[in-house]
Image 1 (cartoon, one colour):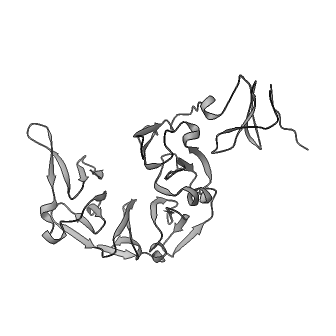
Image 2 (cartoon, helix red, strand yellow):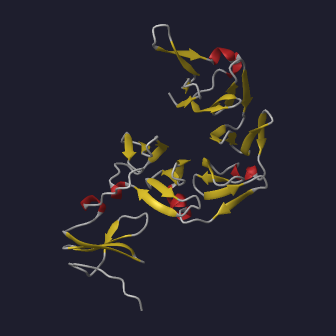
Image 3 (tube, one colour):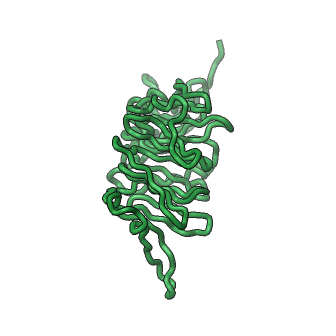
Amino acid sequence: MRSLATDRSGKIYVGAQGEFGYLELSTTGDPVFRSLVESIPPKHRDFGDVWTTVVSSSGVFFQTKSVIFLWDGNRMKFWVSKSGFHTFFGVHDRFFVREIDVGLLEYTGGTFNLVPAGELFSTMRVSAILPFSDNTLTVVSRDDGLFHMNGRGINAVDTGITAYIKRFGVYNGRLLSSGEYALATLGGGLVVSDIRGELIEVFDKSTGMPDDVVNFVSEDHEGNLWLALNSNGLVRIDYGSPVRVFGRKEGIEGTISDISHSNLGLLVSTSGGVFRKEIGGSFTRVQCVRRAWAAQEVSD
């Protein structure tokens, strides 16, 4: 199984390897898979993995590398690519696909059309498309940072996480219920930023994550984040909780005697020294301080 989606009635659609369809309950109440492959012309049935399944007001999209299928409940439409469909996204009932060597396309007027300046992504990989404002979307490039897209064109945005994205690469992302972006990276853990791309927090091995390669991020109804890791299963982050716990594994050593905020970040004074935490970073020891009872910021 490669992808899942649920419509408003609760029906579950499934994309798998060389197969897609939906689940329904049998007369005994057991879930039964119903294939939709028979609705496809035989010459297009060798499509491989169904990487993305998305429910829309027009029907259900099933995206493979060579073909995109749209099932409206009665008949199947499809679009074939010679170069290959890379990634597919749904944002507020708007639907986009990146076609390799072509660019970014949007489903409008019953077919897929190149968006203004969409050829920018003909060779640039796209990992997420996220809401930004009423008229603008944020396109997250895998290796090149954030871009703003509106009806007139696409512009690169220099943000606080641009260097981080270019260093590690982004594989998946989503807009959280808090209004922040969560980006799954290929070596830098999970990055949380505001919608302008300014860093808020990083979850990686230094903060207790078992793996720095994150393939997917999802949010549940309580605001918890679920991460699909590359080699260590699933991780849940209680991001919706107002409480954060910091201890030895986050870099703090000794008995804590004072906590203060300054323009240097969060300062923790302990019997083992002073430890500083910047926004989005882990705790690091302040050099040359062996023991401290308190820290106070003094203006010039």
